[in-house]
Length: 319
Length: 271
Image (tube, each protein chain N blue to C red):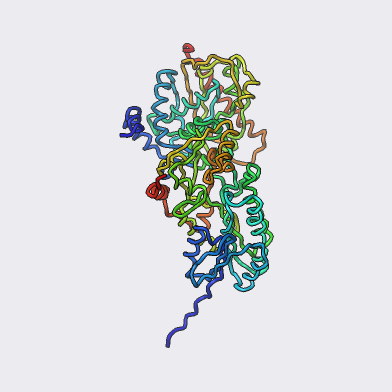
């Protein structure tokens, strides 16, 4: 007689931000072990027959139907609208109010694990930043730029729910610059382009994490219900202008003092890959300490800086 | 051969290259540490400072071997001379010592990171924004750190106040106790005479956003510099009141005063 082995049921997982390159990597890693449902506020993404995919505004009533129908065990919230996208108002609605709705529904329908993707930008770039900023450092960026307010508010909202509803097991991840193939954020575009602006005389220390490593980090976080806020960054550092060199970018210096001058120039140019509100991140370092996450979740990044930069150098498209 | 490697071959001898490579630093795969320290930049800095240290200021360093070969160290000295020349010379003395050289870090004024080019350059050769969090993290990394607890009160003082120690901050003592760091006092004699200032033009300093604007000759005078390092001092940790901490700071101050006196007596002439 054959021994009957009962496999534990696959968990039901909601993944937001399905259109993003990082989310698709996470979906690839989880599709065999979880029953995934993907949503995105921007567009519907085709993910094959086994993964239901929806284009839904979190603030609409139909969003609750998903929770009712699929009985999610965990939620991976990667659908933060980046500061370079949409208007400030729409971003606030999507990032802050949308996330609140998501957390409310998670609480109502008994979700037991929530992972929220934030960004290291919340720390804010200042000349007086110490290096190796840890998770308890103050979030200064809201006071420095109105364009980053929604990112900070998203975090404070997540923190409030973290303490008010411990059963949700919320983790907030604050990664450094996520880069690599098909990443279309500010830093990804900069490293991929043949010409890259720099602030004359400033080359702050930066950290980069490969999209594959970041996807691994999110998967690890989704599998262990440790509550808390975690920086995600490898223990390796490089000066911004040196990184551009290694990626084969030609540097275009922008006059950096007095500070009104570069702000005026950048606002006039309106470059998506070098927006005025991120200007200080190209002047002053925001070096974060990712060791707490590595220790808690047993995470080790596999892709080195050299490998990341080699990819950008080898795939440089001419003007 | 690229221009950079050509300049490097002219400036940096293979022994120096090897010597700096031998000094282990907690750096990443591209030669940087979290504060911006860069091994290659240090080699350039080292070869540029060498003639300044040996020929221009004819620096004499005594007791540099008092600095422990490893573990966290705070090198505490008197600050003087408008520009941070004293920090550079103390750093070079330790980096160039025969036995167990170390590349120290220096805590610098908060205004430097806002200055284009200079801020990055200082970071690359090991200087770090003078923030207690930075100092703590570096002590945890077993670094030797140069600190001038007088800060701008010391470097910006006028010639008439030379060799009078100004008020010391007590931050270094808290950190030394917390991280079990050795405190090595150093008396710097000679730097006061490099840029003697007779007045501080405060309105100008305010307009420029700098800590002080000295009224002085626009040159750095080649005064002979004496560095006297004292034996390391260790302070047990514990929950101490501010008054007790101040007493310990005074102990360090007394040692520095003694080392300054020693330097002043050793000195035969100013230049």
